[in-house]
Image (tube, rainbow, N blue to C red; front, side, top):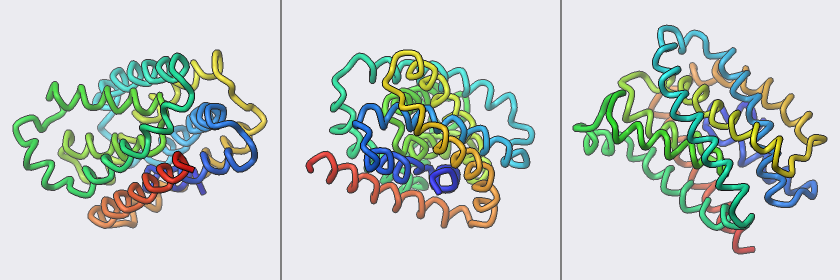
Length: 236
């Protein structure tokens, strides 16, 4: 379920992160274990999105440099700062990203002067989102989809495919750092990774059958739900 949710509405962690907490993992361990497992969603999503990725190899490669560096930065911040910090900040980031995505057409008009793949401002935004993805990652796909939706003049289904790949790279780089220095619970990674791999492969087929406007609204509404859930957990 988490793998499908990741590729369809960018919210794998609303399923997987609470599940890891429920089986007894501490928050920091659940976070890094989840990030390591999410790498397999990107593998499955890339395999299932070849149609949407056709002709985009150069674009993906350029964005991958930014997201790889950002993911490494985020992972370093997580490992070097207090474990609870990300729990306090996450609800605000997720809620803000969801509102941005819901208002994407208006945001696009406001960003008309900076719109475009080579806009420095938007490339900085991609790098910043990748830092967040490496740091915590819950709904990081929503943030990335919101930025790429303004940045790329493509149908949402093709933007979503690019998002899956470049966000997956940010997760992958962070996962390497967590595997080396973080409290990863490997016994939980194996079954979770298998689910992410299968769900990530199935998800793009579902995205193709959803109208772009519907997909955007579904993502935004689910993001608000995640923000509320994370905020309630943080205050509990």
